[in-house]
Length: 200
Image 1 (cartoon, one colour):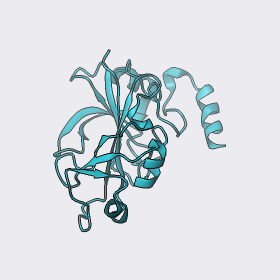
Image 2 (tube, one colour):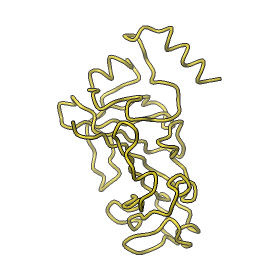
Image 3 (cartoon, one colour):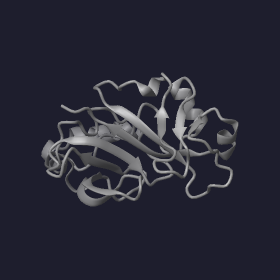
Image 4 (cartoon, one colour):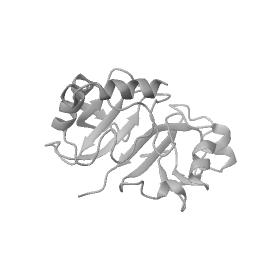
């Protein structure tokens, strides 16, 4: 019902005055942004719901970058968008981060999803980098599963698992399997989702 209401609102609103992305749900290679978008086109399309932010967080080594935040006022709606270079003429990635849950999902994966849930979507166990290291918790090998294949449109997904700063009980080892009993017991969840767009 909610998606129908939002869709009617968007249809009744001129494109130049549109102030919110499409209804919550799946993020794809073309919606709510595409590889052809620039910072300027996003701000023209989404108005006040698209703002330039020079402190977007990569989630690795406290590195920040300049990009555009969509729906920046609510963590559960927020989408962070990075660009191929400082001119911000072409989208290179979008990120869901800094929220316990999200209204968005990518290929069925959303923030807060468990190892078992993501493994079910992937169709087989996958490998993650050791937690609490540089890039810790990022999936490094989908082991031939569904999430390792390009999404329709050519973009791909990267997922990071974690449990905040709670390291007690975290599994050790250079590569940690999603099926590892210790990992399942520690119960990390998806803390970051990145969609990478292909180079043109």
